[in-house]
Image 1 (cartoon, rainbow, N blue to C red):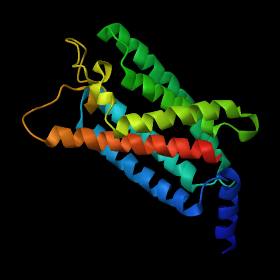
Image 2 (image 1 turned 45 degrees about the vertical axis):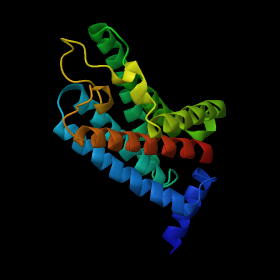
Image 3 (image 1 turned 90 degrees about the horizontal axis):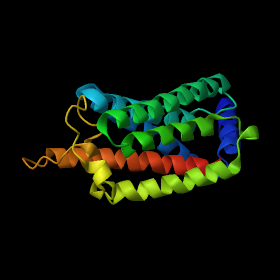
Image 4 (image 1 turned 60 degrees about the vertical axis):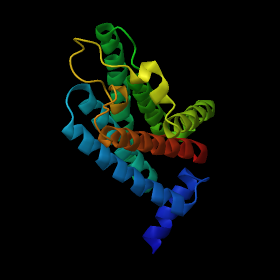
Length: 211
């Protein structure tokens, strides 16, 4: 009981604006999303594989932040800080490299880099973390939730364009592939991916507000 009480107090300090039940529910949902993206990544070739695996790592990291209090797992949070800083740099480099090869900056990779930067920000020591950056990120993620839920990004040519010839494999996400009119399977897959991205963005926004 004392251990549980201590963990509760740690989270009360770390996420003062979030109810306990919401924190636990969010953590388990994010763990499930991590498994979904990892499964997608294992099934897909090319850019899509790495894009999904990257989101699996992000969802797993968010689940850990929701479920494991910083005050009790400081080394884990420090390791996550370095991991997501490296992932942010690698994803940004991939976005720039793919732009030179495909002739356009793919916003899916750009948003992934920004997501990794947000994870890095949230893992920085709260004593030195500028609050205004968190507010801006919360607004960005609220916008992302809306975009994924209403499928607005599907309607933007930059998100839904076919992959350029010679680009070296499929695009980074289901949303970047041309629609398949032969059945409803791809549509359901796109919707499931969009919903997981909306849930991740909502969890990010909630965490930023609660910190």
